[in-house]
Length: 484
Image (cartoon, rainbow, N blue to C red; front, side, top):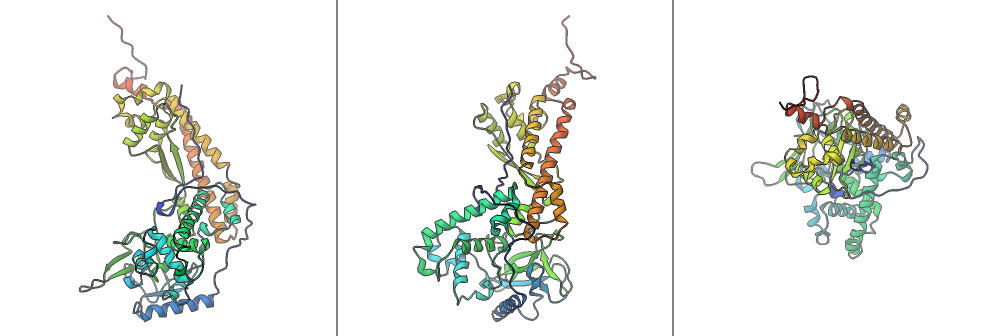
């Protein structure tokens, strides 16, 4: 008898950078949004321009910028950005920001709340610092804080009605998981810091404040820097993203301020040549999916390879061969639970089929789980094991894809039609995510449908074994040896 094997393609999608994330809850929604949304309007251009001018003067007063600085902040389609003041060559340095203007855990530790933040996560300490400085009328960071947005189009800031447009998507579950995580972290911080030390904060801190600071850190902090895993760098963090730029490494770095100086500076280069008046743009992350871009930054791209769906497979603890299967999985770099990111237009991950065959292995195929095969079984699993095993994984994956597709409240055709209309940014994200996920699910279902139609043409373990023993003829017939 074959092993009982089911696959549920839950919309739950683990969020990367787990210091900001835990598990996913669920939520019930009201009716979906119309094309008109309730997104908060941006500040008037005059107010934004005044804040930018004050910010620039603040930087100038600290000798960080001057009239010769190649780029300065300005109003751009994305809100605020960096605009070239003259022609800029490829790889030319456009900004250098000294360490005295960085905001990181070291700055928090040296501040008035440093003593009470020693035991919290680094990002939480920086978040509390940002909130406190924002609430202070006389904060020395006021010019910088005034150019930070009150929110972004990140899905963590979406209303319940806006989130309803993500029904059925993995992005919805990820977003709700982040929001739930934030709430738990806030309650913990409130109990351990905010209430016992309320005299350190000018006014009560709310969950909305905490979420704002989290969103700022997710969208604006720099990583992969020498000795800095979490740092906000005023002015440099205004640089926006371009999907057309494919250079990611070497655009920014931390280096010494000079031959005889121990100070550090953050250096930002332009990855492409620019004309005066053009915006300085970089590539945020080539490896992020559209869902990850939507959570962190509040935008998505039209490129097909940004669309991804994660299949989460598990070896059931009720499986009579659980121990053997887990040992085999762990020997080959996997585990009881395994995530496989399927990218639109790309082949299946190379370890997906072997893991599926392992999970489904049972009945007369279970002899492969014996210890004598332990060093070779993964090689066997990389090829079809038996017709029953291959048919089972095809059927289960196809059924799971169909079930997941039924969870969306729109069809791909309806989403494609909406793309031709003038949508607000958040609905545009929702439509793009829905369509992208469904296309990937259709791709997966199509791959296994095709494979299912070829079951009679595949070569299985027993046939391969007989060939190795020389017991199969040129026409594929089994050779029986008779005694003389």
